[in-house]
Structure formats: structure tokens, C-alpha cells
Image 1 (tube, each protein chain N blue to C red):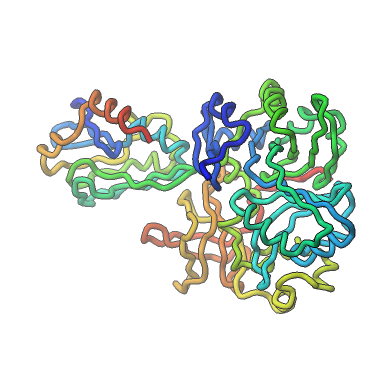
Image 2: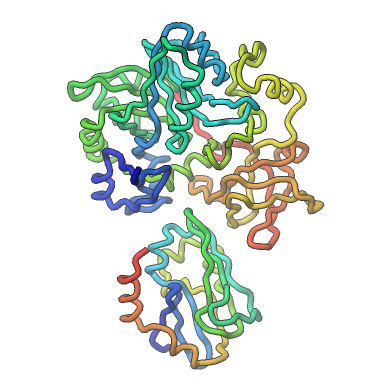
Length: 126
Length: 364
């Protein structure tokens, strides 16, 4: 798998060929708190870059999860929908949200590296 | 007026609190452990809550004070014994709820605990009904600490001997650290516990003791999940000025004598509703699966008729399920009635549930 790329909306993408795996960052889970509900997209759904793809809810509030790149969903992670708290436990590993067949690899260029993302989080605390 | 802080602000900060603005105060929404752990530790052990933003309103006067307050509060204040508390409301002319409150009879008059967001307006409202021989004071020199959970009694008894003898919804004066403080056995979590009214100067000592005895700090986030599991209303969400006690399914809180004799704001309307029932009523709702029905979620019947709306909804850690409360047309309010909830444009199933979602017995 390639090195992870990060969006300003706190999603991560990792690439294998033209298949992308997408989830939310550890920083996002720390901001959200205890995650109690997750809705992931079904296979076959087309999503545009920055389009709404999934939903994550903590005890505090509901948030949309956006896709950092365009493509067609090949799989949503049903395991996290069954056990939402697993997203807090391993957000950047086993608790990915969905996989996507990507449309345009060029879109990845607009995303941040790990270092750039860490810096972005420090400069934009919320 | 800037943002206000309670006397414990620095302590919250040192405990890793995340703050949110709430009713003009900077209040902790959660600490390091997070809402779910805070919730569970309150239910299984004990937790403390800084609720000093709430109004501690003291009234003094002769027996005409009871008459004056009974015009806006539908409790039987004349028969209430000293050191006994009642849950009640301030009512407007239409029987709408201006605030919900706990009123305790004291040696000199009454103490009323008011919601933080409502307290200024409440006092304006109450004072209109008072006479020249009645005195009142919103005491900002006092903090209010809720200690909740099954271990509360054992822990507090060590510090303040005698509190274990208090029964639910009674209180008394105790001495601590060469000062007098007032403790009631009450709370907002569905657990046994106490509310301690203590001077701002001494409150840090009390909290040090609680922390040393393994009591965790609990923020507003877990306070909300705890009270919702216990089926308790949150003013501004489940209650407001357009909702009356009958609609709110709180007619039990109107004293029997007052239901018969009336004489309080909105009585004619409430009397009619007590006899004929209300068009809508507050109910418990259990959404299907894990989906959360937040405030303002629309409720539909199985025939897709819009029949109500959600006023509070969250995940209940102790019942391990999504829980909600809302208002629904009364003919759909029977326990077990199947409903639909519109969430993010999609329909989800649910059913009308008994309240509370989580039940524990209080010490009576």
C-alpha cells in the first residue's frame, strides 16, 4: 500500500493500484469523542471528490464523512457499522470506512502528506 | 457580560476538561476519559458534577410567601415539610412551562434550584408575584455539586456524617470544614446521590476529597446521556413555554390537592387537559438498530402520516441502545406502537418505549 494521504476534513486515503481505502483520522476521532453510530456507503455508489460518503456520530453530534477523491464504492466496512466504538480503537487501521475504485489519480495531488496534515491540525485546533 | 466561570474552572482545566459555552458559562462537556466511560463510572461507582451554573434562589417570608409561590408553582407548598423537596415548574398564564425546578422548604422560606439558562428570567417572573414582606436572593457565593452513583452515600458519609440518613428528595444542614452546608438526596441521573450546596471558598476542598476517594469528574455530555436514560427532561429541549405539564407527561408533579383546587397560572387549561387528555404527549422512543434520532427528527406513523418530533436523542451507554424522547399525537402514544423516524432523508423504524429506559430504585 502507498503512503497515506490526508484531507482537510480529516479523512485519510491509502492507495493500492487504482483501489483506495478511506477512513477518518485519529485526530478526527479524538475531536468526535466516543463514536456510537456509523453508516457506510453501499457498493456501487458513485461519489464525487468531497461528496458526502458516510456518517459518523459520537455521543455529542452527527458528522458527515466526505470522500477525498472521486470514484465508485466497492465495499463499505460493515464491521464498524456493527461496532461503532471500534473506530475509536483503530481509526487508521482495521476501522476503515469504505473502499473506492478511483476515477482520477491526479486528485490525490491536492491532498496532504502525514507531516503536512499534522501541521494542519496544529494550526487549526478545534 | 462576558463568559462566566464557576469556582471550579481551574480545577476542571487541570483535570483535562474540554469546555463548551453553556448558558453563558464555560462548562466542561467531558474530561479525559470521555462521555461513555464517565457515564458508566457514574452508574457503577460514583461521579461528581459541577452544576454551580444553576441558580440557587432563596426566598424568605411569612405564610403569604407560600400563597404567592403557589400562584406560579403547582406544588402543595403549604403542606410541604421543612427540608423536603419537590420537582415542579414555573407556569405562565397559559400553563406553559417557564422552567422546571426543585423547590425545598427551608426554616425561613424556600430554596429553588433553577436552570442556568432560565434563572434571570425566572427571577423576574417570580418577583412579580412577591409582596413587600418577601425577600429573595440569587446566591452566587455558593457552588452546587452533584455526587451521583451507587457509592455516593458511602463516600459522602465519611466526610459528612449523617448524610446517609437522608431520604430521597429531603435535605438538611450539615457542618463541614467549620462551615455550614446544605445537602439534599437528589439528582438528575437516575442513580442514588446528593446535591451539595457549599461556599465557593470551600468547594475545592470538597472536590479534593471526592477525587481522593475515587470519584470521577463528569461533564455535561454524560450528564445528558444519564438523564435521558433516566427519562428526565432537559429544559429548552423537552420542555419550553409552549408545552404544559400534561403534554410533558409530568402531571404526577402537580400536587393532588392543587389538581382539585387549582389557583395557579394556566389552571383552567390544565384542568381541561387533565380531564380530556392532551392532543400531543411526551413519550420515550427506541429507534431500531444503532441509528440516533437527534432533536427535531420527524416522527411518522406506519401509514407515513407525520405525527410528532424528537426533542432529545442519544446513545444510552447503560442500555447499550439508541434512546430518544419526543412529542407525538396522543393516539400513537401507547407503549410498543411502531413508528418511523426520518433521519438524513431516510426512514428508520422505531417504537414507543416506556420511560425511564434505565431503572434503579432511589432510597426512600
